[in-house]
Length: 114
Image 1 (cartoon, helix red, strand yellow):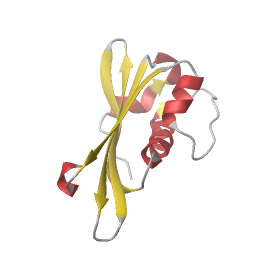
Image 2: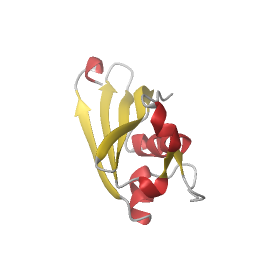
Image 3: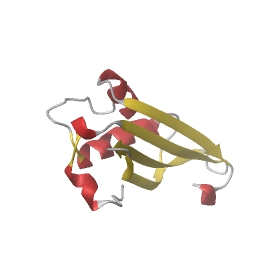
Image 4: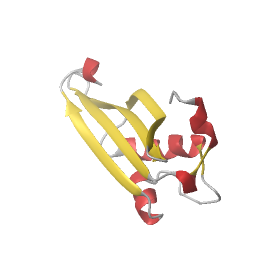
């Protein structure tokens, strides 16, 4: 479940996005063997950084954060008719559409660090 922190993000056209920043944190719950992550996606438009996606806590391992980033990004950015497959990565979508993307994931030791 994503929380959009910037109402203006709902009116952003893909063509105005200069750079996409994807930042994720993963936490492994050793007692049950589950992995969770938090995620934020920021975009640069006219030199200004705008947060468009914020997922505070969700189940998922590996690069699942990147597919959730794509799903949530597509809900708030006018994709201008660009198609993407369900389960595709936002980082790959950006590279395929000549949008600069910076993606980072950090593994954290404690749930509260998400």
